[in-house]
Amino acid sequence: ENVVFGMGGHLLQIVNRDTQRFAFKASATQRAGKWHDVYKEPKATEFTKSSKRGRLKLIKDGTDYKTVRFEEYGEDLLVTVFENGACLNRQSWDEILASEL
Image (cartoon, rainbow, N blue to C red; front, side):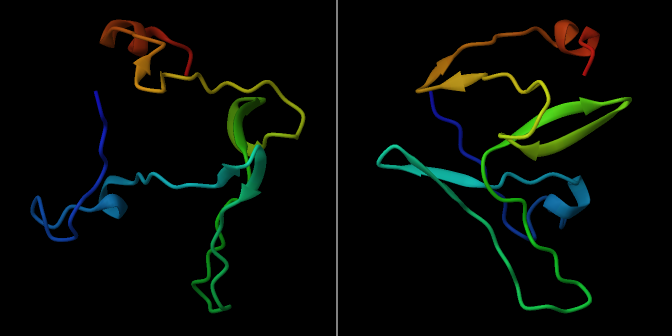
């Protein structure tokens, strides 16, 4: 099975990733066994927003969750769901709702 993500800007009554508050982005790529950061660094303006770069993980910091570089301290809370076309972590909707996250 394949998963494809995409959205036209004016489809679905002009709903886009900003109104839905989500986006899928790349922050690292592996080539020849070596990791390389993927990021954008636009020219400075009042609206400049540089992207996170490198391999990332999700950690819990007190009551908050933070995305940090993979090398930083903290337990990685992300779980692999799909790998090489196989579903490794199948959960029911009730299990997802009952989880701590």
